Amino acid sequence: MDAELSSRLMRLLDHIEHWLPPPSEPVDWNTHVAALWQRHPLGGHLVPVPPRDAMTLDDLLGIERQKLALMDNTRAFLRGLPANHALLWGSRGSGKSSMVRALLNSLASEGLRLVQVDRQDLSSLTQLVEQLRHEPHRFVVYCDDLSFEGNDDAYKALKSLLDGALTGPPENVLLYATSNRRHLLPESMDDNSGSRLVGEELHHGDAVEEKISLSDRFGLWLGFHPFNQETYLEVCQHWVMQLGDERDWDAAARAEAVRYATLRGGRSGRTAWQFANQWLGRKRLAESG
Image (cartoon, rainbow, N blue to C red; front, side, top):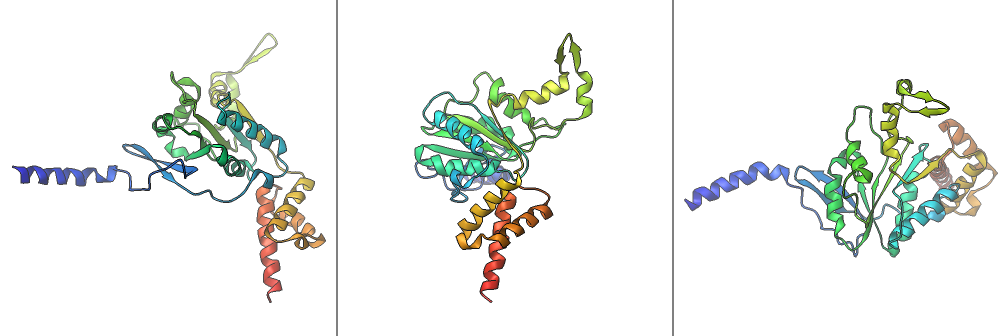
């Protein structure tokens, strides 16, 4: 009988093995400062990751107001003071994701811990938050490049956690998100068909109210916009001198930076970084013969 029971249990384990999370190193928040949340059918688990780079907030130019606002908000949170969930929105390559990474590098020594959640794993956000609730550290749960399609209900988990649930996120968890969309959902002309004018006040229809209601739950909105040429060239100079030295930034580099942005169709921090890599790579290759 024992042999038969053991055999049945082994067969059962074979069937459910694919439901279990893969083995991974446990997160020790005393040494790890960042982790990825990975959903699986039985909930989810945290996978520790090293910081991607050594970028600091001093490396991000042209977005001083946004840096100051996010730094102040995060420092207040780390000290147990009132703070807001934050939505960083705006044009591509403008420094939204880089700012969150730089924030971790700058504030990890003050107790900041970062957990990144992919959009497709948001349905298990409640399980993640409950796992962090009893930790002694303070966490920013971060979702990069967040957006939803019109028929996508995945945003409801995020919406409920931000403000709608009875419990809400614990006091040691704050949510930051980056997006190219200010309201996170696509907007169309049809959305305005339900709007009406009552006296001198414009009342939005249900479609608009639904789309605004998610982004409205983030108390801190930070907009990121394309650089003007002066700021773009300042950022190019910074990265060229960071990756090389001051002799690498000259009139030829400046002219090539302008051409590079024209070919790419826009000026941004990402474009400046990519230009610096291309310029220095080609320059060093030519110097080496």
